[in-house]
Length: 186
Image (cartoon, rainbow, N blue to C red; front, side):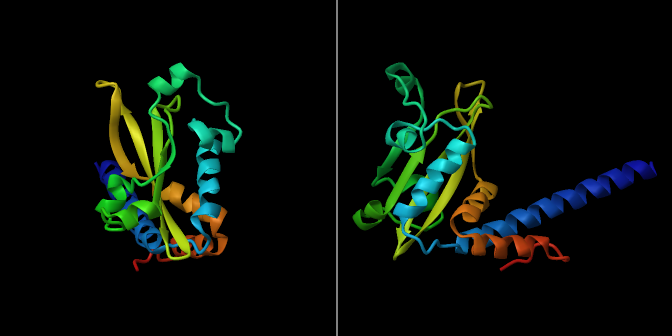
């Protein structure tokens, strides 16, 4: 019985630590704005997704050296090349952009095709002043319905992009994760 109690306590502590890490990352990444323009950051978004094995569409595939999809693949794949004017529901939900012409001109997004693990991504970027912000949404397949299933913001992938685009900011965020008391809020 004591062993069971130790296991439950350890499991609860692990869950609390995971939630604290996620809350800390969300706070830090919500505040992160790249000082580089979107035109410099977006190629890193494309490369990061390609490096993870996600198939890209059209100009995005070409930009990272992936083979372009044939007509049948394009027809069946949910992959969409980078397009402007669609801020995406996640950015609107987070209050980053509103539905107006100015916001639509500042926003861009792309969607990958499915990987063998039956997951894919949507990347949303928005220009803010001379810099920008990028949010990744992981999309898992719903195998019973053969369509998109759950969606969740991928904070770890956003942190990985920060390592590529703004190493100093990523180091600061990671230092907060590694602090002896664990992730700090704010």
